[in-house]
Length: 226
Ligand code: ADP
Ligand code: ADP
Image: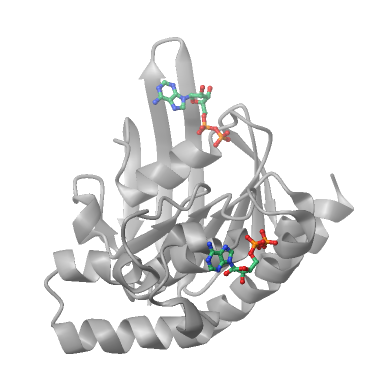
């Protein structure tokens, strides 16, 4: 169960640059929220504040009624997938997926169980012993997703995870991420500038411009009244 509330959030990088302004949003448990808007409108900054990778200048962030502003990233129960995958090149697929769990001192048997479970969901079982360079783009993206799934976090954040893939693979991975969302039952926030991704995946879309929310609604509401 994970509800996220952002109350009047601001991010000021410097006096000239208010990246996010008066951001108010209540995300319900198991929603799939998509942030859309042009480059530089504050999507990543908002995501990074939720993850704790960026300080919140003003306002309050709650997850399940707990104030999170000063909680360290590792204590937030959040898993994040980035655009560039950020896989460790010298580690195998298995080791990449297991790495975060090892750091968290999860017992070895439990690590093996979770990695194998994620690999089964993502069709990665045949590749567990390979290094990232021996994988296709789509397979690498699946490993990045797998590394997030194994954490069993209650919040899933994705920052343009498909933007490095070709068009065909994007369509395929889009469907897989939707299926994944249904299977793992997490509250998800997904950043993209691709309208089709927003339309097909979101329960609600948040349209941002110049650091401000312009519109919040279902895909039908947002794209019926652009
Ligand atoms: P988006 O994800 O929508 O492309 P960002 O959140 O990355 O937008 O950026 C929002 C604004 O904040 C932009 O004007 C960007 O230049 C600025 N910005 C982002 N990161 C930093 C940073 N680390 N330092 C200063 N300004 C930043
Ligand atoms: P894509 O067309 O998606 O970019 P690639 O041409 O990179 O895919 O790879 C096609 C298939 O070959 C994939 O299943 C991938 O796992 C496999 N493959 C690619 N490079 C290697 C390698 N160096 N060693 C073993 N298998 C590889």
